[in-house]
Image 1 (cartoon, helix red, strand yellow):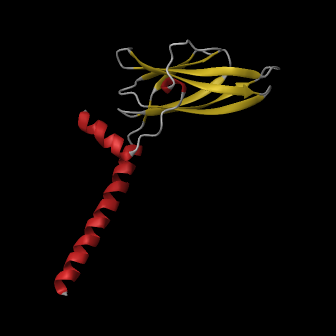
Image 2 (image 1 turned 90 degrees about the vertical axis):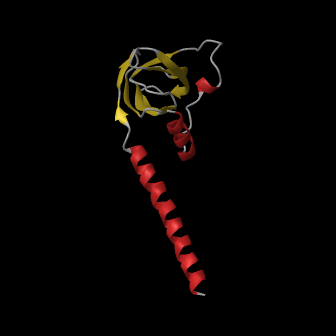
Image 3 (image 1 turned 60 degrees about the vertical axis):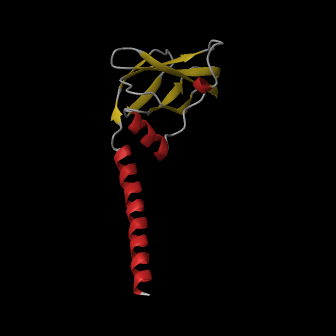
Length: 153
């Protein structure tokens, strides 16, 4: 009986260690996001906040339609550049419509390595050679994906 009790306590300690490790690692991941520089090429007023780690990042912002017309079937084009000004990837997020004198909040996630600068634009159409992956925001990286990329680095 005392041996079973000892193994049960060790088992509980092991579970507690895994839970603590999971939350500690999640906390460290979220504190590694740093603000990155960005450039807005659009004539339509928009704001942005860009944060990235070494393996992923996001762009949050707002588009303000202060014209008298509804903006329809537009795309937010997000170009991600490295420190050496190399294009690492491009994301296109569809904007269905923005009514006149209203705003639209957006968020774009990307999983590109070592991003230093973002260029944002609003375009009318995209080229035909753009893949379906480039037309959607990347999912937030889960813990297993982060560890795998960390091991590759």
